Length: 594
Image 1: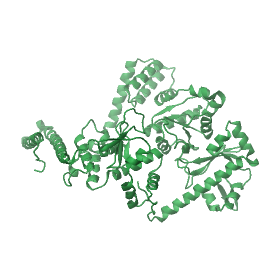
Image 2: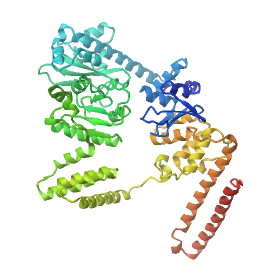
Image 3: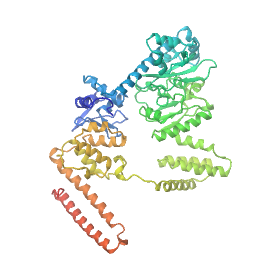
Image 4: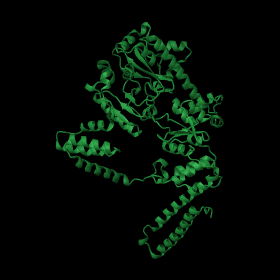
């Protein structure tokens, strides 16, 4: 994750940064044993469950399970990427920026991208100034007619492009940009001997990323020009699949409980005009997985508020499927009379918008599903009920599932008991379909997905390794059955610091488990650490012996006498070993190295 930054420079930042000092700038901390505790900044709580460990430069919340290292904390609080958070910390510590490692190609691309950002920014300022010049009169009148005031125009940097063919081209050339740069930015067309502006006689909407870089433009035509909306083509700086409109305004908005996802720029502007913050729009394309992952970190839930026409409702279904795939809770806003958010607010006011209650994703899907069946015939009702029950197998909450079954009963006339039986049939059918697939074994699953405390002893061993209190050579990789825990243990035994391990951990579940184990909670005194590790090792080996015995006993009745006798002898040997370990656990004798 350290990108192009030299390893030595990154190590210096980690070494010199004090996580207690950094976190204290955001929330009050109180010392509690090895750690410092406070109220978690990532979820609402009344009793502190947020723990910070100075020794390992790690934080972990025992409430919401958020966790990571000092750089990842800055990433979350400042909405920065990994490299930006490192530079942010380095600046606070008066560490000079690093000299990038030698990568001429990457450096050229970075330099070109930065140049395009600056060109787009200058173009946006030119368009913005033109909006208030005589050439922008028609666009300004259009925006004001739509209820967009000057404050909102400045907030979003709105502008106007000239009706002339090369106004922007001439201006940017005069500023020192080249024709090739304008072409690469998607701002001009070049055909044979002619060259001209891409955007002419349009309202201009600068598209800005979460870091403040101007990536490109959306443009709305005045008059009858087609297409009505035109976006910058994909460039080195802009890809319409990867960003959303108005993401730059979310970065500094704290405590957002939801993001409203809309279809168009004007919908976003209308929501902000009426004081409804936290909305974004796609960029002239269908909602993508990349866009879902982008907005995921800004709020815990997404409300889809697409247009009320058939195309908008079908697009809502597709967006819900993507959000579900990315594990993002979602709901739907459906406006009366097929209106879109912009029309609803301007025609009926904010009060009308506030009366629209968000609908659950499943409820919306079930309603849309009805359109595929003839609900006036018994055959249609039956087919709909079968398909609906298949969909409801994905609802985890028993209470929610029961509510949906009650609604389904009212719609179809089938009894709740009959629908429940159909639901169970659908669930069993799903199990039969997937039973033939290769399923991951427990050792390949992350610790957070393992049942109960199956790997409690191995987790404790990882925590003891992170404490630095165990002598080298006491543990080996073979002492760990869980693959993720084995990987963490191996990195610790190789001498890697907990904070650096977390920096390289991309799986959120494993990162949460690791931050908890590295958090310093209940670390023992040095004199008792080895004794506790030996007790954990005994537990690990007792469990392993039990599994071996169960494996040997399996199917013994069907074995030939020779193999049965061999298995019996091995079981007796393992039972004796098990008794020895159990006795040592009781009297404190160390028999682990025998």
